[in-house]
Image (cartoon, rainbow, N blue to C red; front, top):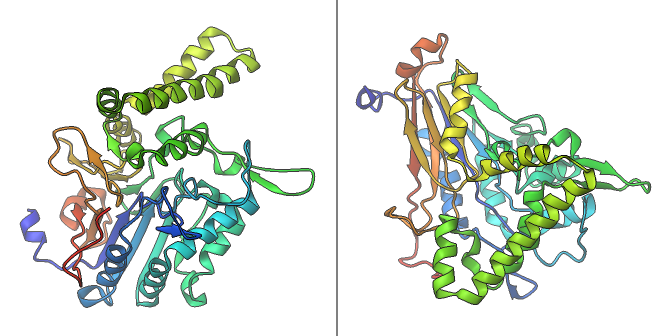
Length: 382
């Protein structure tokens, strides 16, 4: 019956984007920024403009930023870094660099919110986890007009967001031990009164391993599957790949096993924890499938995190969506597309759902790919 619903006008629209990873911009201090992965500023500006004009000008439109909109783990050239914990002061400086690196994006978001019936909900992910600091949230909101700030919701308490009956949003890092963190237990205060963020060990991995090797090979974090990249690398880029693999092994041993040794845990506990860590390599859809079993009212689960766009409709009519990423990705599998697909989820609500049994006839859910209109007949080749 989907073809019939296309002729109907939705009363309310919910859009979801995730994993854009805005960094400090293309250049910083006159140097090329090798850690910047977001190159779609123009496309994102058009996205905000489109869904606040035309037929959407007066319509109720909510944009759910489902985690990792900012990439505070990939901001270079901050004058100081904390090796064990990350200071609030350093996190604020990183946020400043991101804001300066993408001014058009902030302006377009502000203009979107200036329109009638528009709002934004920001779910914190693992790459923008430092937003748990109230000072960072306040600085984020300062980029918007005062009357628009009340149209943005950004809170440490939003782990799972349920904007309509049957529709749920989660970033997805919660399913991986390496990236999971507790917003309420991730800030400590020194004797001097300075606050520090305690990152997950997966965040340490990004800043200590990925960022270091990405400056030699920019593709190190954009190739999937990871295993295939290592196999290809051993054949075609042997020395670099061996160094990268050794660094990964050494890091894991130092961070995980020495931690267990210091705690004097038994081998059974160590084995149990290691098995939990392996959720990083499990089928993501299988892991999230348990969400529907635990939440009988859930009809749609929309996540991000893995950068792999997925639309999956199960036999019980529940729908799983991964909104992918707006970064350029390279696939070594047999998938047809290997570049950025600018994917996002769209939820159209034709009538508010009072009984969950009526969900299918009143709500339409889809995964779309943004197709921007270019002013110039070319774009920068990177």
